[in-house]
Length: 119
Image (cartoon, rainbow, N blue to C red):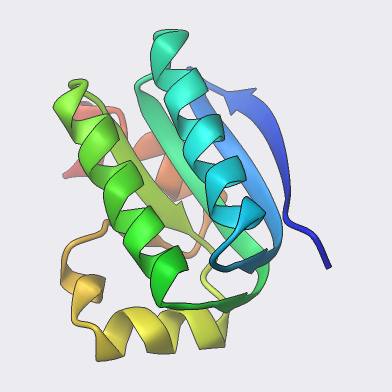
């Protein structure tokens, strides 16, 4: 199944709904382009909804880290939402679970970008 990315906006936060597999090849390029295009458009609050990602390989993990760094270097924030068990396990094994801000609920994830509610 090819990677599919749909974009939507909720309260000034851009949510990328990602479906499929984040693996080496066209998939990671699609994700990279989506994040870079958002940054180019001035969108700096980005939430990756991974609820429909059924597999991620080491290149995909590297791309998540690359996206995180790209957004942070642009003065923005990138957070993860709705990890599947497989993606959760990969991030836990690689110790990246401590690097990303990971949320299970879209409402609280969107609110977490607003510093008044984040605490």
